[in-house]
Length: 189
Image (tube, rainbow, N blue to C red; front, side, top):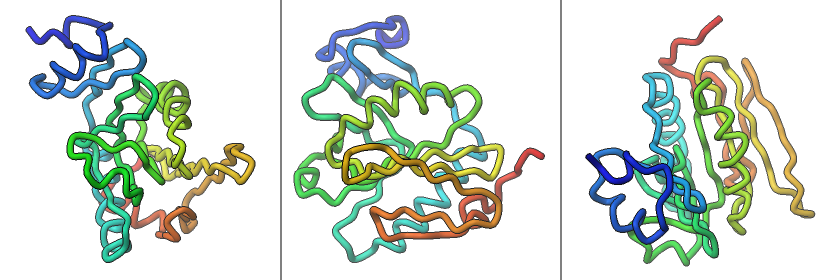
């Protein structure tokens, strides 16, 4: 059985050594190992919808859009996470193949099972990334998008979108409709 599956704690060295060979992905925060939760049809569809729209809108720019199989390492920490989607244009990320460290935007699609972790411990971890300007949380069951933005005073300000709103990612000068985010997704009433 996989070492990371059996252990809830590991050294960063063990995590980095064993993660590439593990049958499932794990996230690592300061000694604690978290197996990535399974995703739903809605989760994959929402992430795919946003990835396609962002990739198309940012084509030809310095921005690169990465879906959930590429790890984020936050410098000067022992944090390694797999965001559902991240966007970076930082030149320091260009030579990094196994992970990125300087995101402009991070997006998580949450379920009932992942909401507390995405809002709590993960958001606290992501805020340590010096280049992060926006953290996006998307509800997979109801039309709701929350954009947390870092202000000029490093405070986090939230803007909530619902129903027929146009969602704006200010750091990327990007906007799209809620309908395009939730295209082909069955929503709970």
